[in-house]
Length: 118
Image 1 (tube, helix red, strand yellow):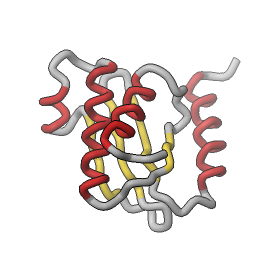
Image 2 (tube, helix red, strand yellow):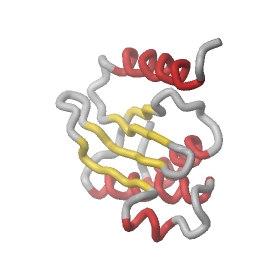
Image 3 (tube, one colour):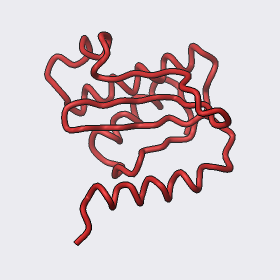
């Protein structure tokens, strides 16, 4: 039986292979059991343009109840607001192999509410 980490890595590699041809910036999500990280990465160079996380000072102010779906949505809105203010409106959503439900979906919904299109 294969571990869940190995299966997630396979899904991540499959997604990234399909995204190679796209020239739009990527909204990359990583979630752990306690925190979430969101970054907007430039497609050609791989430089991080904007980031938001529940570990940062601003992220800790948003999450007073811990790592919940509401906190994830606020982190998504924060990264979306930074990107729109920086002139980026269209991105490709890279969920890093995580399944699209719960907190990952909440991050995506928050970013869409802030004005990002993907």
